[in-house]
Image (cartoon, rainbow, N blue to C red; front, side, top):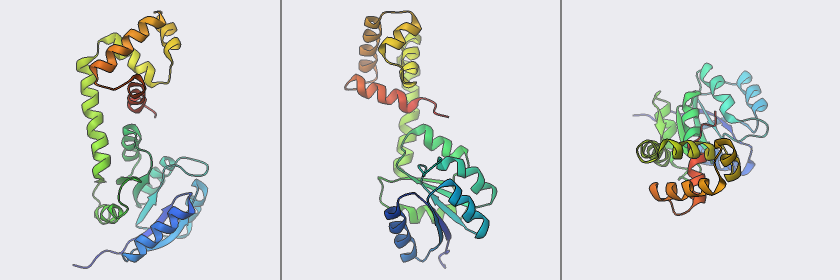
Length: 209
């Protein structure tokens, strides 16, 4: 069976990353047709060339790569996200906006080759690490519903929106000391080591859309 050669558009604002991706893809017979480092450069590239795959980062020079996904989908270009973003909400949103694949930058770059082969067939590709993140989110959401009281969940949600102790206390008309007590309970119930980890988890589950 002959390997499908993909015409690829690389979208990333780091020249070293672009160079490394070009070497990886071209060494494995794919053709890098163009490179872009911003939203505007990408749109211009879409008007002058045809592509099978767009390999894009989500942090660009002037706008989020998420904004490019609907445009790529409209043009029939399979979009593969390759990003440092590991928040479950970002991964979910990328697929909602039209991505066919998601790979995090902490993973082996060779996973990108498997991802390209998969999305060229019109199939969705979720890397092992990204899938684990989404699975943990699902488990975490279930735990929140089962383990936290209504008041604890309310405080957890406000924490996820970036509110500090005093702001939460003021909003809920309770004392900061009472908020501290709730924090201590939630750390124990959700099996975190400290409040910082609890806050980080709350922010990761917050809806950033």
